[in-house]
Image 1 (cartoon, rainbow, N blue to C red):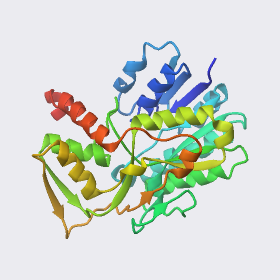
Image 2: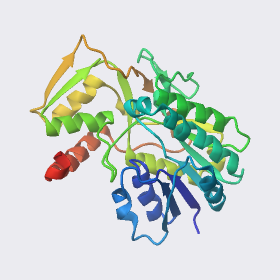
Image 3: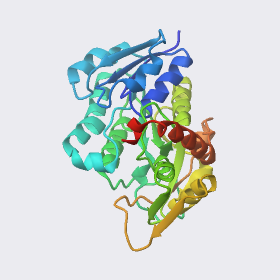
Amino acid sequence: MKERVLITGGAGYIGSVLTKHLLEKEYKVTCLDNLSFGPQSLMHVIPYTNFDFVFGDVRNEETLKTLIPKYDVIIPLAGIVGMPQCQKNPVDTKMVNHDAIINIEKIRSPSQMMLFPNTNSGYGITTGEFYCTEETPLNPISLYGQTKCGAEKFLLESDKKAISLRLATVFGISPRMRTDLLANYFVFQAISNGYLVVFEKNFKRNFVHVKDVARCFEYCIENYDSMKGNAYNLGIDSANLSKQELAEKVKEYIPKLDITYKEVATDIDKRNYIVSNEKLRRAGFEAKTTIEEGIEELIKGYSLMFATEVFRQ
């Protein structure tokens, strides 16, 4: 029998994709979620007999003490994400993104696997001209990045050992869709409005498809002993793109898209970096889905969603 996996935030953007992926690979998966965005993102996994759900909140320490010992693998995806939400709810952001991770780490035993999703936005502001590796000092500029990087530091310094995946900006269709992620947002604007306004067009990011994130978590479970105790950048080397390059790629698939570059305005999100994913590749894993494939997928997905007036509203 394969490992028993607990995913906190399993109803979220990554969690709803990861849950189905692991169920298909015959892992026994339990999702802990407070369903703040509703239950619909998990409806597609209800038929799996190896799926279970617990309604609860990671801020509840008694809930964690009851659940954590039952599982072989812990994947804490629950989080308050995005700069606006974190700024709006700073106390909850710290409790969910940082304090809950510390509690989980204190409760779990050394024999239980911990796979932590960090963000490579922790590299913060650079020139965008050199590749950030896992040895590059972290310099998170947002509360989200600060809480995630703080939790990662605690885990990697723990004697219990963990794996941290520093995720590039994720893109792609999910049952719990997020349109605020950069590639998802650009395609969303192109489909819904036909125009796109881009600030600080030369700022760069790295990208990764949500299904590759799910595949990588599975790979980490299977290769935990050789990978534990380390952080790994997870992205696509060919997708270290500036905002302008990303926008122009979207225009290749939606030629009528009108792009305006604002030279005088600024973006509140100042992240600017490119990332090397060589360490993870040496460990045996590489992301497969290209940004071009993701754009095509998003166009199909949004076109289907926009067929209903409910989604438009």
